[in-house]
Image 1 (cartoon, rainbow, N blue to C red):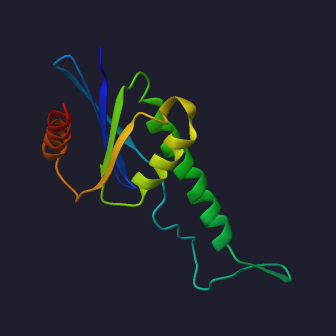
Image 2 (cartoon, rainbow, N blue to C red; image 1 turned 90 degrees about the horizontal axis):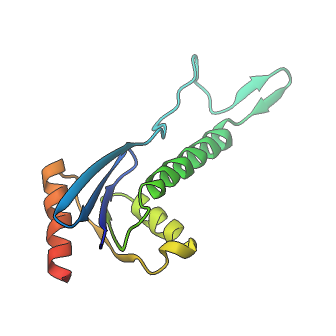
Length: 137
């Protein structure tokens, strides 16, 4: 039984379409990545703590990186049993997912293609994934 999985993702959400034996299953994964963190009263780039000045930019970047890793990990958790994986989306997140999958021994030969695509509706995404897998078989 072949289980083909197509993923459309950006920084906010991922849609995972699993196709196996005329049966389709759509999984939606939301990311917890903060787009812009604002602190109350924030006007300067540095924060004052007593006599010290702290730049919160590094903390924000570390938090965003941690949230991105958790998001990618959650997506990978939904890819068990995949025989072929197709990744598409408008942002750089698809490249991070592809790199993470290539680092994992189980998924090294499963990723068929990584393509750019615009923001689309759920139906358009599902149609694009179906058409991709129909064209390669």
